Length: 493
Image (cartoon, rainbow, N blue to C red; front, side, top):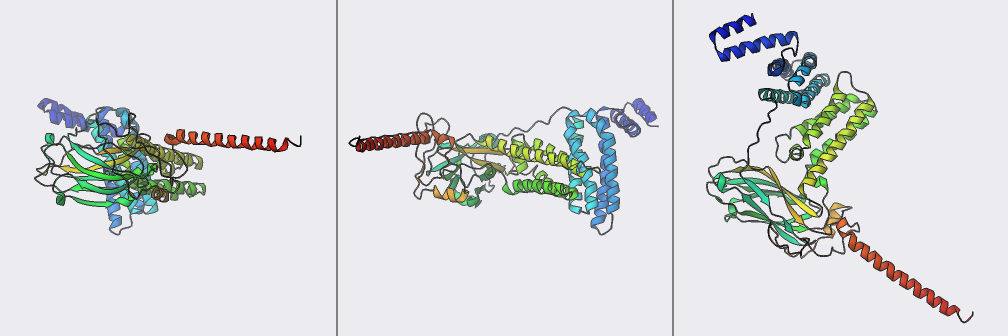
């Protein structure tokens, strides 16, 4: 019957009708033998089938929230999805080889939908269904243009934190400037989320350079290294590039920790979930372990489109995908109907921990080099003079170049010990300007005597000179004492 309909469509020479009837034939063939047709239609048939099964699961979940007892039916609906994904995934993978990670994620989430029904967790059921919907949308998009990545929109507006040089104990102004304002028709407003290491830097004040400072609203938690610069949208504003604000920062002399530049709550949640899961797995509580891991993964995944989230920061340096893959593998092993053994799950936990640490380290390395103190500037939003949202680079970093940083043993105490109650104001060193520190561009100065005794590599040469001098003095004193002793003994000889 379907082939007959295709013939009628050909006779009518209707392109849209021919395409629709052909896809109906492929869908019918795919039901009988998954993957036999190949190509995008196979993907479309698979995704259509998975969406239908997902709608049934969501319908049962809605009834459960309304007060009916549908947990058993939800479990059965999840099992149907598990079976269908297993049957159709190989054909979809053959048609779209680059979508292997998405299919692995779909399989893992189908396992979690079953576990949510068994655990009677409405929140996890809803989260799993939401994430499956996202996977199916991605597969549809990939099938529409296989092998062709979507072209990112070019950001014509961007903000820059100008690099500066400062000595320990010195206060320096870090300018934030705009680029591309004239190309976008003027800047009507913006929201910038600024973060730094509170053990390495202290914010003293913010100077606005837009004329009417009363239009500028700020919210901050400077003690935690966080400040929000906000210029409310208005029809009047900068029409050319200019300096919008200056952050007056004091260099405390303590090397920052990588965790200072990522959302600490999210990072701690993932690390704690991994540690707790390992303990539960070793005591045979695999279901409890997988549930806590999935809760942490849900929170991490929710940051995909959230500016400044841990996911978005790792994604900016190409590490979010690597972290996601190992977490999917971990949840797959711990959630499948026939779970992997203890050793296999612990192995995945170790891999997830290593991927997370590597991702954070890669992100921090992208911000600055050794001897530099980064300040991250995330562009939350920007609008034109007409109130139209502007596309901009999502994140940039300013850098303060210094020397003599030490590693803190107690962040807050060591940082305060290095503070200078009357710091000098530093000299700006924007791109192309002469550095105030000399030919090599490094700031001079000697660390405070109250600094901890753990020198960074930048100060090791000075420390070796001190030890060499001390050794020479000690040797001279020893020789003098020996000569004196011989002189006292000579008469008796």
